[in-house]
Amino acid sequence: MRPTTTLLVCGIAAGILVPALLLIDGATRRGYSLWHHGASQLGTGERGWLQTANFVIGGLLLLAFAAGIRRVLPPGRAAVWAPVLLVAGGLAMVVAGIVPTDPALGYPPGRPEVVTTAGRAHGLAGLVLFAALAATPLTLARSPHAGSRGWARYSRWSGALVIAFAIAAGLAFRLDVQGVLRPAPAGLLEHAALLVGFAWIIAAAARLRRRSAPTEV
Image (cartoon, rainbow, N blue to C red; front, side):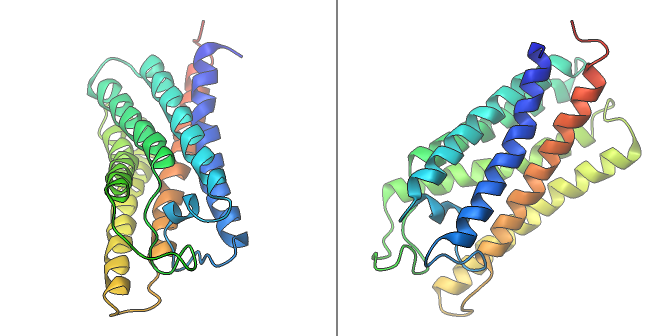
């Protein structure tokens, strides 16, 4: 497999690996609710090592995908900013894997809910990741090399949905913590944001791979 193709395939791998492991692990983890608990909470408790590995490997795959995008996009703003955003998202995922989040919403069971510096750092990394998942498709949608109107429209909707789901997840979490709405669908909304963002990465990587295949040397 040629170098550029390999780098683009890393995007497909990241798009499949990260959400698939989150959903499978979440559906089978004792005491964890995909409706209620955030994706990052799978990095704590039993089998927490699995999501630590998932975030770190997924982040490294995003970094490789960023390099692939940089190689195939024609010169312009998109060729600069899309890789920069993906690098930021990839590094944020690695940090989120290495630095676990704090216990919250009753998970892990029996652990006191505290706010720590490590938890704040993890939360900041999460914000950067969601920002990258939203901004990258919006950036490429505005590029003159975006391609078809359908693809540009899909990219804009993907970015907008990541933003909407991520904000809604944060609001649901706050309502749950304050006892206004329990159990709030914070986990469902956060997983939805990740699914939309990584689905776009799969589609973008596959599309760019097809476009670059005839000309790659």
